[in-house]
Length: 458
Image (tube, rainbow, N blue to C red; front, top):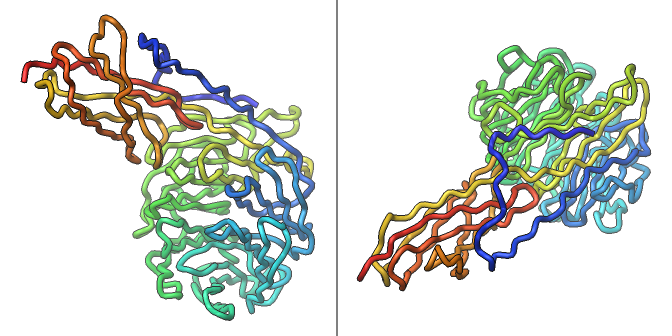
């Protein structure tokens, strides 16, 4: 496997003149891959609470469970036509759309045993049973087929004493059973897209009332249309949906307010998969022997900052990402990719560890400030990918920059946009240097920045 980094910022030096900082560099974890004991695949769900991955095997009537390295933990049988997967918000239950049983199964994520099965009332089989799942509006929504030429939406409500199933929604929109996507931060938005047919139909629904009320609808979206839709994913804020259409040379971005074109991610021929992590980073997969197989994009940028190009087994065989074959670990530390080799039915789960991207720290302060008075530092962390919540930076003060001795005076919380602030009351007169350190994480390299302030008399 070859990994390529496109970040334009040079890596920052980790060497400081402060002898007491004592920083170390964590070793990077290598990507892994493992063969899967299945010959078919439809969907994937990542359980961060138990560090396991679920993969559906529709034609083998099973759900495969692996650990975070791709090693198989268990293969759950009796899952008739297992297609779509969805995790409960507490990660205790995996819901499985059983197309060939016309039902949704509930699997305990600790015991890995089926605990319940809910009839969807749709009938069973290729043009009837549920195929795609998405939790939204306090319900589990599913796509299903009405007959050979029509698809619709249904929902399963488990909030009461008895399960309640509602079907027959989103009628006259889809020619086949639609794919669904939703996001926890915008729980009342549901996006569905037709997975069969040439010109794809995409629709956005408000599901806050328990019904699928149409907000926007569009057929054949994108600058060059969308034939053979393979996958779709919502951004965390619910404002954009990214679609992977096999006919395009890029992943298309649509506004959910009206489904107007809202940008593209430049990938390559025949997109097959898309997944978006909680910070908005898009993983995009394509089919085809030329160019990278998986690329990562910061939200709102059209050029990838990292890409993986999987090795080809021979001159006559290609390794490609399957339809819908990408999923993020919820902490953004890695991407799971299901690949197949042309000319064979073998499937592989690849665990792609997110590389530490180059990170920069900028710090601002007034040129001078009176001693014993509040002095406010402000700054920002900058990197190709977001920082999320819960990050901090350490603040060091050096009262005599020439001596190189410093004191750790505190830490500051980093906002989701990378900004931070800190207020100090320096006591000594003369030049004082403040150094801000970010120790890095699974996605960001260590970085620091400094500013010098002339401390004057009271």
